[in-house]
Amino acid sequence: MERSSMRDVAAAADMLHEASIPMVRDTMSFDSRQAARLRDIERRAQTEIKRKKRNWERQVEKMRLVSNYTGWFIITFE
Image (tube, rainbow, N blue to C red; front, side):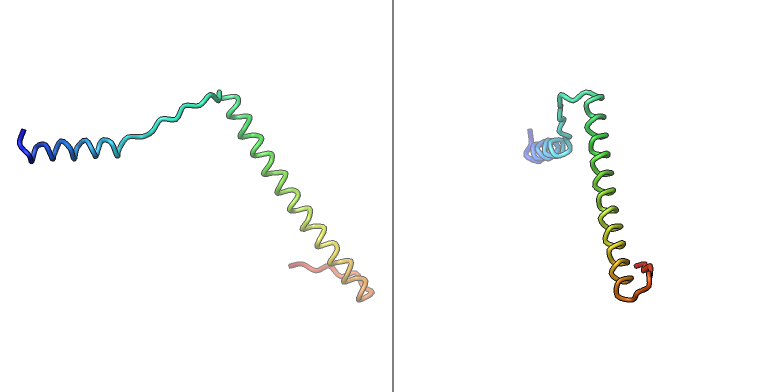
């Protein structure tokens, strides 16, 4: 083979090596994968509910403080 064609073959081999997509096999079945995703969704929903509850409790506490200082019950919105 000529040197230029050897370089072309080497370049083509490099391109094929870079274009390969790694295959990852795991042992999870569809059901176990779905169950894991549902647990993740439930966990995120619970986290969001807790965050909203804390925010609501802070707002209620702010309203109580305002009503104690003014003698009036004033609802404030941010």
